[in-house]
Image 1 (cartoon, protein in one colour):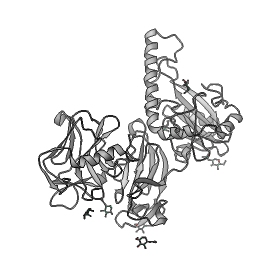
Image 2 (image 1 turned 60 degrees about the vertical axis):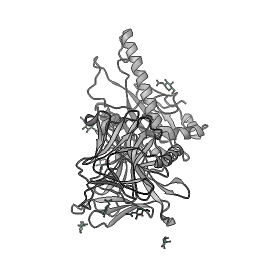
Image 3 (image 1 turned 90 degrees about the vertical axis):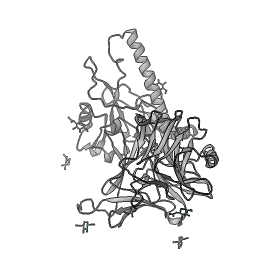
Length: 507
Ligand SMILES: *[C@@H]1O[C@H](CO)[C@@H](O)[C@H](O)[C@H]1NC(C)=O
Ligand SMILES: *[C@@H]1O[C@H](CO)[C@@H](O)[C@H](O)[C@H]1NC(C)=O
Ligand SMILES: *[C@@H]1O[C@H](CO)[C@@H](O)[C@H](O)[C@H]1NC(C)=O
Ligand SMILES: *[C@@H]1O[C@H](CO)[C@@H](O)[C@H](O)[C@H]1NC(C)=O
Ligand SMILES: *[C@@H]1O[C@H](CO)[C@@H](O)[C@H](O)[C@H]1NC(C)=O
Ligand SMILES: *[C@@H]1O[C@H](CO)[C@@H](O)[C@H](O)[C@H]1NC(C)=O
Ligand SMILES: *[C@@H]1O[C@H](CO)[C@@H](O)[C@H](O)[C@H]1NC(C)=O
């Protein structure tokens, strides 16, 4: 669950908690007159109480009172550590442990040499810790940066600004050595390379990371080997700047809508959201709301998963309209479960194909310029380039130009384009075992049924998270002009008569 629009329940309880803070033992200093702890010393321990009524239990406050660090409940019952913007309840930073804690069980946060979040079973239950950090104090700066320091040193031993989750805030540097920003649903990443920033989908646990958006620093010179890499930073004046490391020379800006307004004093963040878009927002205490003033991708159909796996996005107006590549009756996502493994190496025991093939006309990919391609290919050659390669899931041929784009990752949302020469070839994994011709035993049937049920519910759950926003829009629109156009343009024919779904688009 994201807390962006400001959860009033949380805000209320946060206020209450300022009085009755989380259970604390051991050394606590730096407490100000109002009882808010502003510094943790070595030896500090705080216990998360499983029956805590609030989804956020602060243990440390910034001096300006705008941010707090503490235990955060994420989703239904997961436990995380977070730095929360108190006015909006938005977590600007999260620890996001690889193994998530359980909110309904006890846990402790200790500050020994570094910060450690542990479950009930002590050392064996370490969920997250600051690595390679030896510190004497922990403070939360006015900027929301959580900093572990040694007394004698000005450089922090560890800081949350170097370990972003899905959000960058004012004055936080994104460098080539920073870990990428990862969206809350862990499906998208923002990375910085030497001269550009880019957005990626994440498949197979990060083994395939196809790029779907890129912004190159205008004045950086990719061919100049001695030029230092760029770093990015959100500026209070309303832009994301790209600078050369060392000299700090500005080599590009992404300017936001508010840049021309000379809006100063607003708190700003830039977040990689669950739909794969990168958006910037500002907060003003007058409006008490986050207002968006930048998005990397403006057209809904250009978002890589706007209609889910095997979806077809039909552009028109400001809104995405979704259909399915493989199912003529389904009109809303999910069209298909998300694929988590490739088609290699799990051949079926009969030596048969593990996938069906679907061929469609008038289909394209929003980010085709970023895909591997073959030039001067015919539609047949394009298909062949994909068909025999088990790491290929589909190929899109763009007619006259002869370009053949290969999808070396699971099929996500394709885009409708009113051009008969734009043809697509897609592989659809066959349900386990059900493709064999000989009859299945009742046992096998039961297993297959159970598996499909699990897959279906996974698909629903997965797509639900990613597409709530889309669904809200979907409900608002109904009678669609573009849908009529699709239907009147005639049924989509297979290029060959092999596909599992001819006339996929009669809706
Ligand atoms: C942080 O904010 C507080 C309150 O606004 C202010 O008194 C303090 O000087 C600020 N600290 C820094 C380092 O700017
Ligand atoms: C961000 O980078 C600039 C320039 O390299 C540096 O002066 C500044 O201290 C950095 N900020 C943080 C929070 O590390
Ligand atoms: C390469 O970049 C460095 C540092 O920015 C600059 O001093 C140098 O003149 C550049 N070389 C060329 C050939 O542009
Ligand atoms: C922007 O605002 C600042 C502070 O309010 C002011 O000093 C500056 O002159 C303004 N700049 C423009 C271009 O309006
Ligand atoms: C197609 O979609 C409809 C509606 O969502 C669903 O009831 C049906 O089971 C789907 N058929 C296939 C073959 O996936
Ligand atoms: C594609 O065709 C054009 C003109 O027909 C030719 O100039 C070009 O070299 C060809 N490219 C490849 C990769 O074969
Ligand atoms: C199969 O596709 C992958 C990804 O596009 C590519 O790296 C590989 O070389 C291809 N294999 C063959 C045998 O063409």
